[in-house]
Length: 639
Image (cartoon, rainbow, N blue to C red):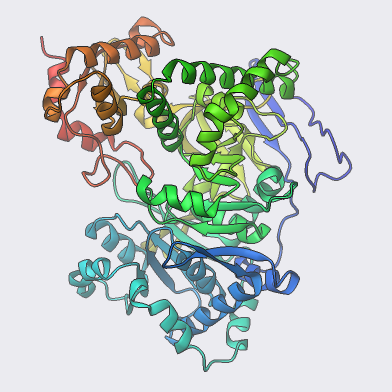
């Protein structure tokens, strides 16, 4: 067993900045458990519903949100204004007859109204139920029925109309409101006659153990399950995240901290960061569209200091910048700049971890030379002020993490589940280790089971799964340890590395176990590749299904003077196949021969959420892909 060490505030860990190294436990010489004590004092009274009103009392003029206007500009919202709006909508929900404990579903993109509705529903004593706006009618109906939601708020009239035929099958659902029809404002008007005390009484009976939200897992197989998260789960998560990630949430420069949220608020990752921003009074903005034509102007006008993102988006930013450099005849300069940034980021890591002295003078000079030519342009594409990015969903990889660190954007990589209210491990700011998902979040315990499965314990772990047939919430971790279904390993200092999903492990006909995720993540970072699925379960060898990145392919064909052709002909281009084979050869260097990809095929169609091949969080739906591309799979093993 190792002893926790704190570099500062040894007598009181409730503060930041502070470095508290994990306490580790070994079994047979291998680290099997790591834990970090909480940095934030546990919340014993009150609920998330109190946050807007506490902010209004403490700092009424502080800007806590910005709301995008019709002309594309941003209107600042003070703590006092936000609390007043939350109170008005909460009174409207009460006036409509919604009772404490009732579930209210929200089906919308990442909008300002989402955050208002979240806090208003909590202030009225309700339980929010997010539904992805891209969900099918069947999926939405299942969530509404299973949760017993009595009210639904959709973003568009089209969403409400699509669910219209399902209403007779949803006897609990009594109210449907639509954001774009002005119903949120109408709710505020409807409750104007009620006294503020109506909401204060409801807030007063809430506590940390009160159910706050039912978040349904998007699910790569089967029907989604409702994760029952309490107000206390959120407090344990966000309060410790705020203390650990002090560069993001606690301004230490002349620039006010700000976060532009563009990932789905239907996902716990987005909800957690929104709550953390309100808790820390960090200016929060909402961007509803991930399309570059919409998102880039939002980034430019909002100018965030931190982004909440996923590896796929950071890969796209890098590949787009490289393609632009190639189109302008500056590819060799870009590649040199990439090498400099990567080595600079690795040198920074070495200094912080004590394994090196930091960037050399010549490396600093080279980085300064390339900053205006390359790195500043990448930062400008993200708004110009971004200094940090919180990245989750899947491993980013050491190469890109080092590049962004060298380019002036520190990446805080994390790992977690819906069941853990977001992150369970996070890159520690004072001691990052590139290529890992960091240390346990303060207040979290990580254990590696005998079969390699990651187990999680802590106050941020869900109360249980929603089961109306069982009368409510069924405990998910009765022994205090939540099985995650993920496979990973802890190193000697307690850093966690994710190697794949337990249920996705491939067992070849020869009995070799292969984790597909590392191969898929490596190949997906290639500029010509959109998605990869590694296959080989009960097969003689490992193969891969590859889809092409449309922007990358368009750029590649233009740069090589190739005429436009149908997608099915692109997939057979000998030059393209040779490039992809070289990428696979590089990936195979990480593995033994039985684990390596022996064959691959390029599909004419990409994997999309609309086609049912991806979850809303960009994870592969493997069973659906195997079913829809069965002929391609069989072709890989024919002969």
